[in-house]
Structures are given as C-alpha cells and as structure tokens.
Image (cartoon, rainbow, N blue to C red; front, side, top):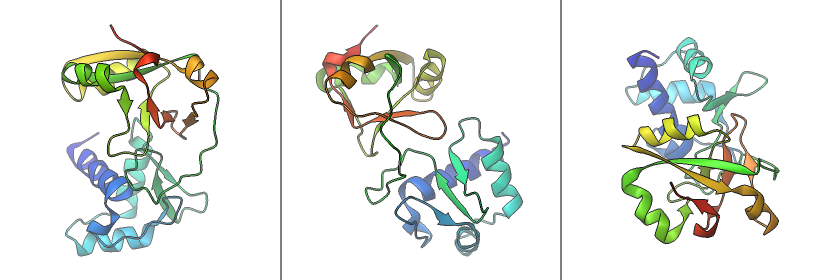
Length: 181
C-alpha cells in the first residue's frame, strides 16, 4: 500500500477499533459505523477521505482488517477492538489443534510469567499459520513465534472465535498451553 493508504488504514484502525469519540463517531453495538457519517466527521477533524479512498483501503488491506456491510452503507473493524461495548457477534468456533502467536522477543519473559493476555484489547489474537505469526511479531521487534495448544484449551472449556478475516480470538492463553521456542 502507498503511504496515504497506510496512513488512512491506521486512522481507520484508531477510529473503528479504539477511539471513535476522537471524531465524534458513534458505533453500534456490533461495531458498525455509518460511512457517510465517518467521512463527514473525518473531514471536520482535518482528515479528508473520499468514499473511493475508503473502499480502496478496505479492498487493498492485506489483513482484511475492515468490512463493509452488504448494503454498502456501514463499515467496521473485523477484530482488534479495545472498546468493551463492541460485540461483533462472533460465534464460538472449534480452532485447529495448534495455533500461533507472534510477539517480539522482549515480551517473552512477561508471557512466561503471565501467559498471553488481551491487554487493552478484548481478545488475544492468534493465527492458524506460523508465517502470519512471524509477520505480526516482526512489527514489534525481533519476532518470536509461540505455539498454543488450542485443542487442550478447548477441552478445558476455553472459548475461541474466528473473525471474518481468519484471526483466531480467545480471552487469554494460560502459560500451561503455550509452547516457547
């Protein structure tokens, strides 16, 4: 993506996942925002964005972070929310037996002590393949890939969800279920 598209994607991430109030935007309980309102409020706050640019970001985002409603009038983030009031309506799903979590090496000791925690987000994010986990970890420093025994977690009653873009979500991953390199 071009710099403009990356910057627009980061703006959308902030507004649709974490802080819609920064521009006065209201999300419904499932995280949807009216596109016309989003564009108007963004412009009022110095972020000129056309519908074509918005559609381009949604279409070209390699991680499929955003979804546009079937009627084309609303947009939301597919996951990654820190807003407790947002429930994107995912149903519990059976994950693959093994999932992966990418992190930076500087976080490994804390994870060994306390497991994987959602932190400011509503869920821990996991991937079904090692390559995605490496890419995620590399965004934050020297990447480390942890394995998660999702089958054992599921057997012990932990609940998993899968977002529309294939990211696996759960509340937390206790240390006992994490494989460290």
